[in-house]
Image (cartoon, rainbow, N blue to C red; front, side, top):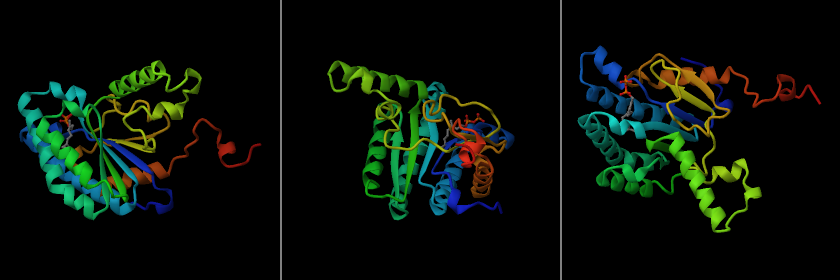
Length: 247
Ligand code: FPP
């Protein structure tokens, strides 16, 4: 088992859950079976993060581009999401997990959106961990949406041009109120960001594993955290500055 330092945990972990299709193909199953197994991995990782004391977990569950997949796959993914929310809502409350969602949520089928809103409402008082689902999400759309919000408020005189700072801009993003991710994990070996949290990952540590998402479990998560903890995060400074050895 990987040794991790409980004092130096990443506050916010974000995950690009990739490889459900390849997992299924390897086992001569259909893609949907891969997504079903993927939901089990979601359950295991959410539980593990909560137990470890991770404060925010963001999962890239469905991108804006994913709407272009075959209709039966999209339908199955939406059904799995709804089922997951219905089944896990009470458990989230028991485990003090607050659900949040980012993305073009109005794109979701009405029944899925209703279940999502119900679960978000139910878990509102929870403050142990935030499970943040990216649904119909795209980083460029998020930034564009934020810019539109800024322009609107400028026009209304609610803000002044010179008041716009990085923290103020963050208030217009779908992730407002959430810290930037410390660690971004991508499964199944591809070194790509795929339009995920483009603004927020400026100083995030990236971790790519060949493990396919359905095989990603608690052990794999601990491996990723241990790797993260072995790195020196400098945020643009020198090592000496960070270690207090330079004026
Ligand atoms: C990527 O695998 C995965 C997705 C597009 C969907 C992720 C969804 C889940 C894990 C299940 C539903 C989520 C929740 C939160 C209940 P891929 O299909 O792109 O795999 P491939 O690249 O191998 O084809």
